[in-house]
Amino acid sequence: MTQSPLTETSVKAANVQLERDIFLRTLVRELSGTLENVVGLKEASGFISVVGQTMGRQIDEKYKSALKLNNLSREQVAQVLIDLKKRILGDFYIIEESDEKIVFGNRVCPFGDKVINRPSMCMMTSNVFGSIAAENLGYAKVELQETIARGDSGCRVVVYLELTEEAEDVFGREYFK
Image (cartoon, rainbow, N blue to C red; front, side):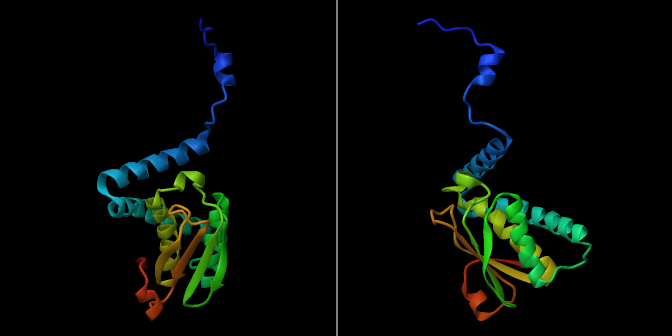
């Protein structure tokens, strides 16, 4: 079988599913997978947490600047967290909200199918949510009860805003102002 020479036109017309969003989500998936395989899930989650915390601070400042606020109330924190996820194509919504906690559900991960079997990537949500909540409300503890990354049909994320007995009893990451 003889091969025809490749031309710029034939290469451009090739059915290759690649664009910036897919490339970047795949990059994050492969980086997190490499970290999980090399240093373990706990340590990989720690590395991703550092990035998430920095991003959380930056996002918090962007929202407060845009809204011309020095601090966000609990209700505003909840709305900012939902809005930021919608902007990156997640589908988070509030299940329950009180002074003690905000419970979020999610139907679509911003990382899409790239998050499957990469639970360390969920540290982005934990740290962005925890950083923003703690910066504005003084304290947060984030519990990832269900995640798409672990094979659940959706996510259930609880952000505790006060150190209650319930918050003390769950496994999660704590954040302070």
